[in-house]
Amino acid sequence: MRVLVVLFENLLKIGIFFCFLSVMIQAKDLQTIQSFSANFEQRVYSSENEGSTLKYTGTIKALAPSSVLWKYDEPIPKEIYIDNGTMIVFEPKLQQAIFTQLQENMDLLSLLKKARKVKENHYEAVILEQKYTLLLSNGILKEVRFSDDLGNKVEIIFSNIVVDSKIDAGIFEFNPSSDIDIIYY
Image 1 (cartoon, rainbow, N blue to C red):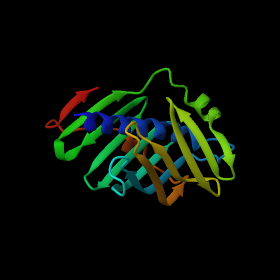
Image 2: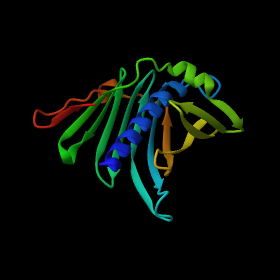
Image 3: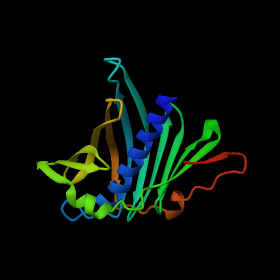
């Protein structure tokens, strides 16, 4: 059960990060971007089993000011929707969706101001006591690194990045079928 709680907390942290990202991609000191699409590979390096790595792949779409759709393809399908302060984690194989309200008092713009440049193309940000390392190339986010509550190291590497393409805002709306379980957390 503890592993499931930590997994959900990690998804929540990733969701919060991508809310932050959706604000960050508009920042003038990084680059003024209205949309961000990419493939991703997420690697989780186990703190308990040295050499053990979990690998996830999928796509992300972000639209300013605060909409994000994070679709996992492998190893199992999962979708994370963030829009208007709500995060939804949809597990198609389990036929369930978990709805979570993101913290109301979280001022994403002030968090952005706290992100500091460590060196060229290397930034650090602290969000809800979680430190993120952001690696950029030509002003565009290429990689994110952080450690989870179990001490696992997480890397998210972006590829096939497209900025400022037209993204239909409708994709950020979760429209569940009537046969899925809805859980409010």
